[in-house]
Length: 158
Length: 329
Image 1 (cartoon, chains in turn red, yellow):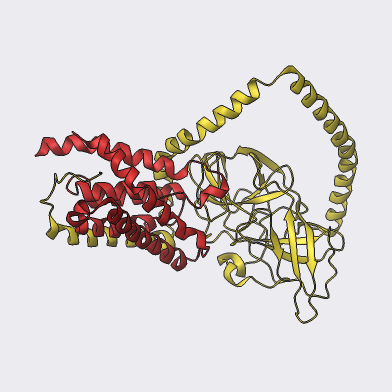
Image 2: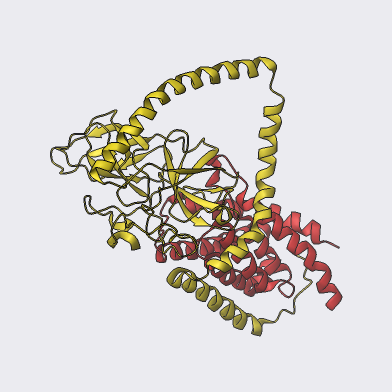
């Protein structure tokens, strides 16, 4: 059991690191609002796939990394990601047997919840971002979910 | 068909809730510490050093591409560029001759009036890193940080005019908030008649507005707005923008004035950090101890305060002369 855990930790960390760089790669400003939250999708994937290995620790650390790299109040993304990853872990047995369409819809709900927590903390800390554009990321995130699943499934497949 | 392999059906559901609560409380605690007490500066600075390689890794392909494109330009282009630059240099030198005399005169007059507000004295050039911080906030990351003496609230210029101010300083990098950010305001003055007001960002690059201009005020399309130096953040007399349109509705008490920034907010790659002359530095300018929550310039008593732009410094005198060296650690 222990050996199994150690093996799957490396792809987990690597995929999270790659997703983190995608979060800040410069895009044309037209596309910027559509940028999906790659790291969040990766964390959801691992929360559903193997919550024992990474689990909420991965979610918390990934959230903290987003806080540092985006320069917002420490703990904002960490809180949102922890809560939503916990929810995804809770639902994992059901999500695994869903069709890919239902999976995407569930992920859309999780991403919207994540975005809502960010929105709420933004407002509470005095930097409200009220543009409609911020609600586009959950849509694009849900749309690329099948790609994330097949891509990460290949890395992690035995 | 993509489906999950059920490799882990025996997750610890009982522990999940406990861990979720633990991490949430930890995150909430971090937020409160960071926001309310602002004493996580050291931790944040340490963490940002870890993040620096990622930022460099993201930015370097773009910089490499720019370097490659620059190094394979033809001789013709180089020649044309050289001629153009020579022309510009000649024109600039001629204007500079006048400027020297004018500066000396200004200094004499200021000495007569015993006025210490001066033009920025020390500069540091920094490069914008090709990193997108946030789609909905006008912030950029610059490759100069606390190591180079950059401090929170420092004014940042580009070749055209005022670009923004430093909103966060890490060890190796700093974050600059653009004057077009919706939470940013800068005290300005009409260069034609000295009318003082505040230019507020709109969140849209290339657009500022003057929300506190009465319909009767003397402001015209094409007027140049320069920094007024009130608030003690920005050096005096740097161009901020030109008035693009003035809409006066007789039924309203305030006019709608739109301003085009002088700085190339979306195109500049090189920025200049400015140090104000000693004795006029803004209060709390020392790195690490700056109590700046929202990086908004404090408008002074001469202008109405923007309601969402309330600032902890707003009640302090705009220019507090500090003894030389007091702001350095």
